[in-house]
Amino acid sequence: MGRFRLQDTPIVADARGARLTDPANGGYVSFEGWVRDHNEGRAVRRLEYEAMSGLAEREGERIIAKACARFGVAHAMCVHRVGGLEIGEMAVWVGVAGGHRDEAFRACRYIIDEVKHRVPIWKKEHYEHGDSGWVNCERCATHAHDHDHRHDTPHAHGS
Image (cartoon, rainbow, N blue to C red; front, top):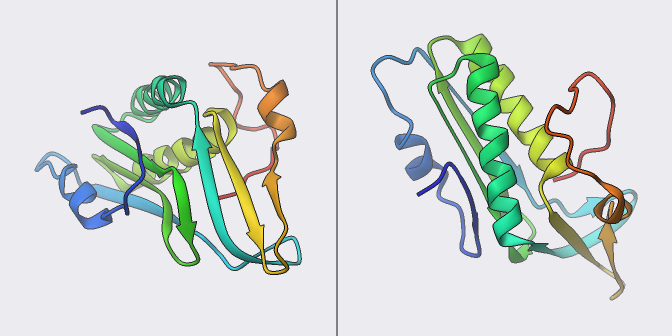
């Protein structure tokens, strides 16, 4: 199994983190992104995620490989949900294990930011009043994959 995965079932973070255990590592960091009940002043009832599976998994693998090389971490994984999610469910999980905490924190942040920016996963919010809308989808059509994306330029992130 690869280090980046899409799945339509709930994410079990403890089981994922256990796979990164290595006696050579001194630091482990994880990030969990949950479905929240609001966005931009609107009450959200639930979400749907869609993805281009093959492309998403290849791009996710590239992001994780670059994070491991760039920050010198030994192990990293990311799981992102697809399909329908309810409020409070985990939408994305990132885990990183490395020799020290600093590189683990930096690699984890890099992975989640790059996944949100580069991986073809789209989020549709279903609102309290019955309407719905795709979030940040203007990026979907215009984003060109820049494999050397500079991380010091601002861009929007959502979970």
